[in-house]
Amino acid sequence: MKFTEEAKVEIVFGDGSTDRMIIKEVMDKNKHKYCKLSLFLPESGVKGIVIEVITGIRGVLKFIKNDISKFSMSYIVFIDKEHCNSDCERCIRESAREYGITVSTIDRLSEDLDIYKLKCTVGNKDFSVYFIFLGFTCCIEDFILKICNQVISEYDRKGCCKKIQRSAQ
Image (tube, rainbow, N blue to C red; front, side):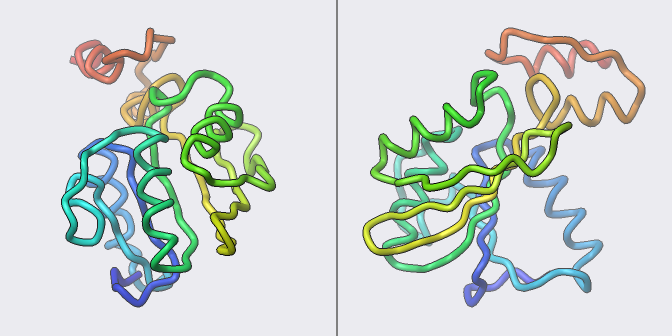
């Protein structure tokens, strides 16, 4: 895996420094197994241009809408589950519509996890987006707690990662 501007696949995060840190470390350890990727951190602005930071699905889709007009790529989106209600597909479609992104298909790739492949269009550009919602109830910390055999439960989503972190102490 190599982060490069020449990549045809771009990794985008909804927010969360923990998500980025864990995923980047895993990919760095396995870099000989992956294709060229480009990494985008929303807080850094659109390819060097400072933008208003919007987290969650709306922020990701706003970035993709601006990015796809200059580049033609596929996107892998890592996003905490707290940014969406229980119906991820509806949440994605409604947010995409808000930014003028047409979603032609959404395929759920896992029965156990919220992972989706979307075929989308903006203007005359077709592209794919893979949405990976992190966490069983809320965020990536859910996965970490589960691995550590900690009990996780449903939270109200607002600030739930902080609640999960406190319960693990």
